Length: 67
Image (cartoon, rainbow, N blue to C red; front, side, top):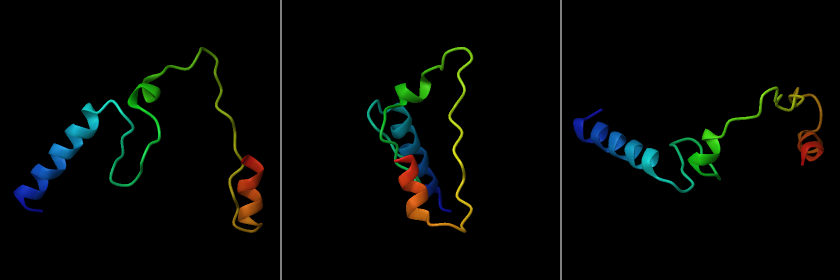
């Protein structure tokens, strides 16, 4: 990587970090603001358990179950 490429990556990372609106990384676009990521869950909160797709069934039916 060249110095200019590294500088570009750092500049964009800082812009993304400072942005208050929806933001994205190089691989994933988040549909919410950073404020949502910073929220704390109440004491005792348990995230939902989702069954992982085992690649043996119908993938569309698996996704439809959660939608």
